[in-house]
Image (cartoon, rainbow, N blue to C red; front, side):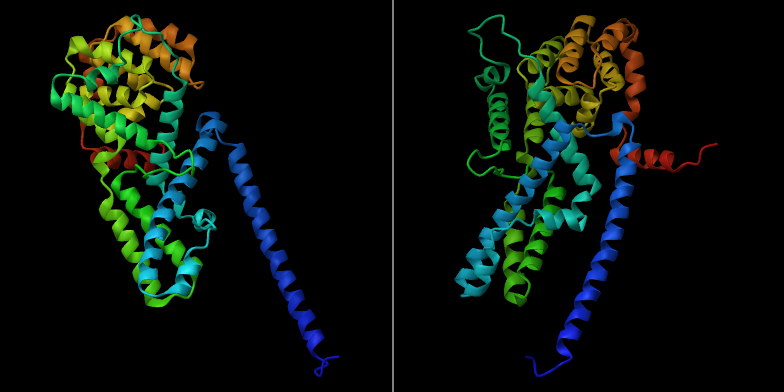
Length: 367
């Protein structure tokens, strides 16, 4: 029996208050859940992520966070161990992922990050689903492998860089993690600092020793990162090295799709149009494809080439309608190359300028 007769009553009162607080929080949580469900229900079908994209995005996001977490934590632990901070080493070695905490924080909702990751997932899904085509000559090497053997050393080195970057993009079969994020530098920087801050929060009390170790580990990760090694960057350099002439371009575009090299297709298109990779990727991934057809006509590609490209993309992307494409093929080919180039001229303006114009258009009140 307790010496203090009021202790059980106080304990019950405190428990009751906690229960009431949890009930109030549950009500708010239920309301938020209902709001999200309503928003999701009224989303137009063409704005909703399909299950393949949603699943791929979830796996990619988790993989990137855990890749950065492993890199930062490993180096911070090594630093702390060398400085005799055994207690912090044990705390930082907690195997629990910080992914859930970053999701809950809202930091991963960053629009720039999500635009890049959604595009990357859709690009990879499209490339994987492209129809296989048996080569006319079974003895002939694939497109990229032929260029690896090219007598021009710049072209050969560019092709090899694409192969290496493509291999590095894949996850490790043993750990499920990536060897690197392969993000644009600014997004990689953001993710590294978010991860370092989340690790600090999870450890809790660590003082200056923990802050210094995590900061140094993050800076090491940033210093070692080279945006130029990204798959997309190597593909653009390769496309520039080839510098396909008009009579060569149609064959290269068609063969890159036949080889399921969607990144190379986008890079060849972007270089030929004189636009950045990200814009060329947006053009190719858009299922409505009006800008793609204009782009192909602006490059003066003929009906057969456009038909082959359109068929391959329709076969690979369930959002595209093959019959609709077939019905509009004649209309596409009737657009002159000059008219198509004039229509696409705004795409070559500075991207920040175009973004500002679009932002103003979005904010304009309807008349």
